[in-house]
Image (cartoon, rainbow, N blue to C red; front, side, top):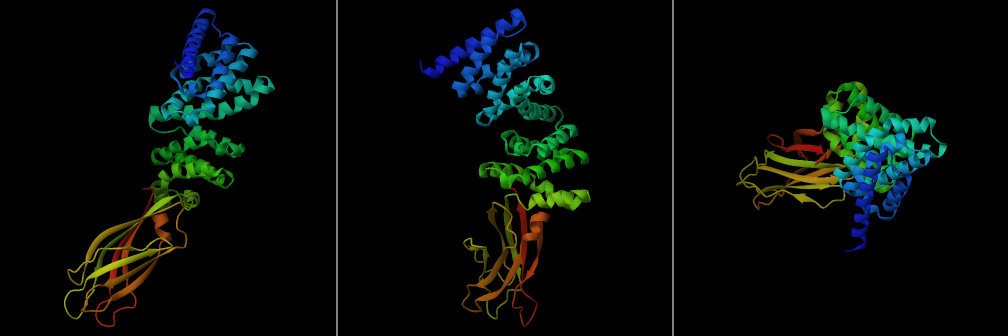
Length: 369
């Protein structure tokens, strides 16, 4: 039997002893809690086990009824559990945060009336264990997040900027995106404000934090595009600011060409696409007549929107009977980031000196996929 198994057995035994002690006396022995903290501190993997999750109600009880020393040990144990959430499976951290939500009023009391040395840990736990769990419970119960929770989250992000770079802040983002999608106008505004506050801190965050938050927030891209076009005017500035910072995918679909004529026979037409420093892309060659149909899509992924970049498309002819080029077009692609989708006919230059102008039918899409 390895050392970890021995310690897990010890931990389960300790949890059982705590359970007995609680039922026998209504409180948990301080020595049990100190032993629990020693196990959590020395064997971090134990924090993600079921006995660890089951210990949380006892820790909450100890905060409520224990002596000052017992309260401190219980607070330390909750703090150690919280520190492990980023490495836990999502279902474990979710279950632990929900169980810890019952400590919210006790943490509030300790902040206001407890010993000064309790305050920092109690504030941290209250801010994010309690709030994250409350949001989680509300989301699971109703499918939306209560506006008051989001206002509280905004107050925390506004008053404690360092909290924006924490794991709970990152974990809150999917709930904010859900609120943008399903919430009332007031809830949408609070969620937008919270995302805006998080975005403001990215330049000061560790690179891995800002990247994780931007990837999580990218799920909001279609919702932000909708708010810009159809939401209340006061949403527009923040929605645009967020869209300009989120990673996304540009999809360009070359639908068809028109009036690609040559004097003898059918042309063999293809398009070559160049965007920034990326390798050129090319459609298949079509030889069906003057109006070739491709319906081919090309995808580029970006860490942030391609501000100021232009897509260069040249339309060429492989046929030996006619000219080797039908012209070029350069298209500014910024607009699609805000609108989500843009489609149109784009005239090839130089224009034909005889007959109708040659053009390409093209669709653009900017999304999180």
